Length: 327
Length: 132
Image (tube, rainbow over all chains, first blue to last red; front, side, top):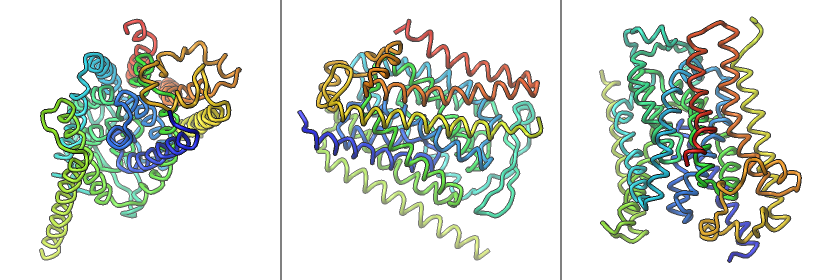
């Protein structure tokens, strides 16, 4: 058993992990959980059930804490978020039930692998659109008017008002169901999928997607976390430490988001996701002894692949912007 | 009506809810450390992941009905539980504010959409426990 000092240290290190996750979660629109679950399971030895439970609670904290700042800035699209939440909350209920089934049948290794894969696959469409600060205007369809998908906001970084017009709501809604499903299954806000649904399917500017996603994450996670509560996935001390940390981190993250350039958001987002995604997949395979590598080797491999990928993306961006200047 | 700004109301609800939940959670943590535990467990037991897993120190065993009694007894675990539920209800209150806003604006389409979201939320909260 731990002594008093060790318990205090343990508590504050989890708060620190929460601050880090909350800051990046709010900056990228992912919600704190996507970063928190791998950190707690891989580096702190927290059982995945408690990590996902604490993560869901922290995800609500990130959303509530940062959305209050974003709504003031009037970037988030409230009408859009409510129509998409029908799908995310429905998906969250289904996903939570699947999670309960998996943990009851010793299938947690699948959760690790799905977690890592969701992190990595969510990168693909975003990498393809790396250079689009603001998307090209697309033709309005029936859903643009029906669900009020158009709007405008003032972009501090570009120093002008940006008008936008979303379309293909049905495609966004379908992606949102899966975003909700993975939120319930993995205990995350599924911000990555929500951002991609709005960025790629609805064709909205990155700032609108990240802020609106932050808004929606709270409702989705509130749905899953009530189910997690009754299933016993929430451990009071871990959840308390992460909620406090994530709220502090999210508060500062939201202050930075309003100023930061969109390309920067994406690069930070990519490097961390690649590393954590790979590390989670390795851990899943380790659990069933399909591939057995030592934890340090696993860490180094994931970190090396993530660093190389980011360097390639960074230089590709430099070269492409150089070509634009030459033209 | 022109002076009523729904996004500002939502912002105040979010801020108020977040602050209240942090106060409750921090108070709960202070009580846990000051009273060396809570809900019949010692601080060491609560801080141990394996002990918590083996002995059910988790949300399943924190009865919602017992939260008020636990708070009156200044039990840290119940303060944390109340703080966590405050966070959950803060999110739900945002949906309720929007429902009122759409109803005032007589936007029946969005009233129905918002009711669907609330149906899902209350299904998870009230129906699911009986299914587990």
